[in-house]
Length: 219
Image (cartoon, rainbow, N blue to C red; front, side):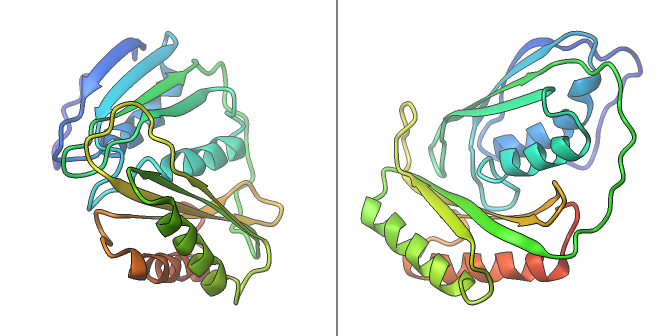
């Protein structure tokens, strides 16, 4: 991932299917694509298969939250749709993500400022082949830790299996929404990086609160 081959010309768009493999997660490939897909000549439909969460890169648990907020700020909400069809966790999971992107006619000017105060916290704990009680315990622990700093906390669980999943796992996306701003602070943790469910909530909450303290505009 240190070199990029670039051929100048028109970004065509169209229907594309790509197997991302198991070395990098789907989000590793999707993040740079999102930057230029709105400027393609034709509508784009991507189907990416591989890991939806890995040990090193941002995963698909947090990516839709972040880009939904970013596109709101850029007034591009109708341009991009990201859908997780199947989840794929290490070591043998095969996830599937579909992306649809319509071409943009223009970009409007925006006023981008650093938010001053966090308004509310929301999140999603997604899991596959994991005991539902483990997820409930993680959410309760998260609310207890983060609740010391914020009152409005909404964390949901999704323990449904999407498609055929080989490996079990769980991933957490936490989002801090700021007052009068579409910008957010996004943090993600998954079972590939923190395998112990007993310490998962504490580790995730500390990483999230550390980012919130910096009031990062773009994560």
